[in-house]
Length: 152
Image (cartoon, rainbow, N blue to C red; front, side):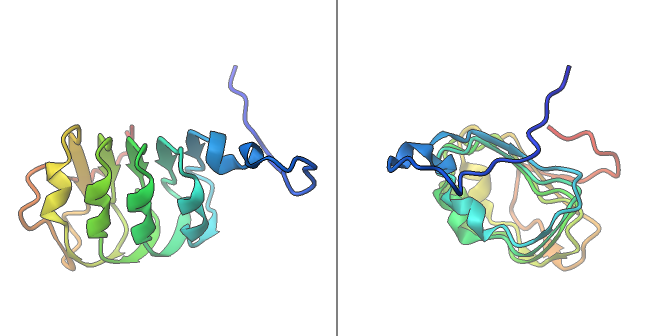
């Protein structure tokens, strides 16, 4: 049986404690395949997040540099969205990161930060090798995105 949280509202919470803030307790955020839109800047306040999976949606704008402050993050899946700009160098600060997928974001440009592959537990960085505007550069842990959605 799979249970899904359809709504989480803390707007009427009477607690004055900051322990009710999702940033203090949320560990996994999975909103993949939802066709949600907009930017993800607000997610950077989820300081205890370990897994962020936004695959196959319609998120846009740049990838926030503040994602590099989510120090507990182990999995980052941004596959198949509408992100633009560069992959932030700040993601190399994520010392627990094991998997990152940036594939099929046609607006990504620049060079994949080589420092990303120096993150000790990082095994795989998935990128869109068919995107001429995105260069893997010296990314030794980069793999080409596949059209299948066999995502971690």
